[in-house]
Amino acid sequence: MLSIPYHIVLGSQSPRRKELLKSAGFDFRVLDIDYDEQIPKDYENLENIPEYLAEQKALHAKGLKEKDLLITADTLVFLDGKILGKPRDIDQAFEMLSSLSGKMHKVITGVCLKYGQHTVKFSDTSNVYFKTLDAEEIEYYIENYNVLDKAGAYGAQDWIGLTTIEKIEGSYFNVMGLPVHKVYEALKALENNRS
Image 1 (cartoon, rainbow, N blue to C red):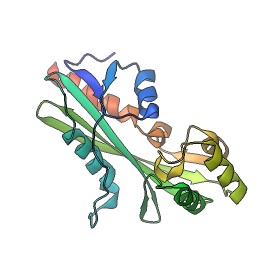
Image 2: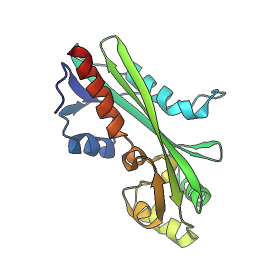
Image 3: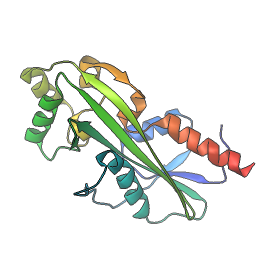
Image 4: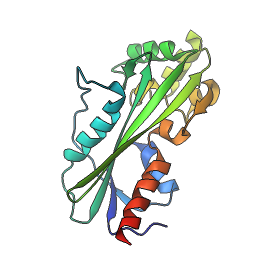
């Protein structure tokens, strides 16, 4: 396993991100960051917004210690040049899932590593292909799963992912909310810079 002179802190309450980091063998503690995610208006490149939001979360973190390395992330869904974040209510979740039906969309996760005075930012993109969903399937999913805490109103790891995703180009774990392979590479580069 990696040997870095920092204690890893995950700045996210996402159970999926916790599960992914734990499965990858990382020891970490979780820090709750009080930051109201606001997608900036008139942002030049929409696909850079996940990275921007991940960095903003890192900048708003409180209670970090000198030897802490903070990992923050933000995942957004992009369809036809528009951003689908977390739905505000059930009706918007239905609209989002209806718009994704039968189409390919992008999932982009931005990541920020913050340690001392340093920050490292990167993102990963996956193309996700949905089969066509009928209204009953969308209603079933909304009624039986928590859709309000997920970008695009769906989770690749639950029912809709199992039954609706036809293929993914790129990292599946990125679609879940954290491109673990890129996090590992960034930490590995940090380890190599020490040696």
